[in-house]
Length: 114
Ligand SMILES: C[S@@+](CC[C@H](N)C(=O)[O-])C[C@H]1O[C@@H](n2cnc3c(N)ncnc32)[C@H](O)[C@@H]1O
Image (cartoon, rainbow, N blue to C red; front, top):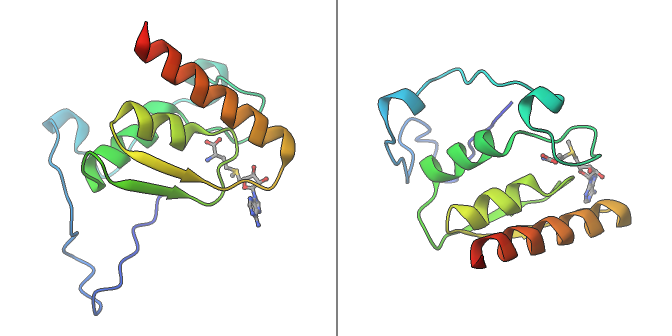
């Protein structure tokens, strides 16, 4: 489930940022595969597909914005944000997942350089 939360006096129908992408990407229901079929990259049990998170980031933020993921898990949001030209603050309580997040970030950065 994706939730959009604002604090602007209750006007929930007007996003502050709503970047219309291609018609193909603008759906109210997003179907995606999970697990290996969906391109699962980590051992985290609830990893989300990168394309799904990246799509949401591109619609609801602008390049250079900061995305907060306070349940970072496998670090998909951080990688998707980086590839979309956004910054990301990732919070995770499990040490093993934190290492995974750091490795994925480094990998994304080195792939961009090469
Ligand atoms: C549903 S998973 C997130 C999966 C992530 N979106 C992904 O695609 O890989 C939730 C994560 O939140 C972490 N978590 C739960 N409570 C937390 C807390 N109080 N502070 C930081 N992280 C927490 C868990 O360890 C778990 O890895």
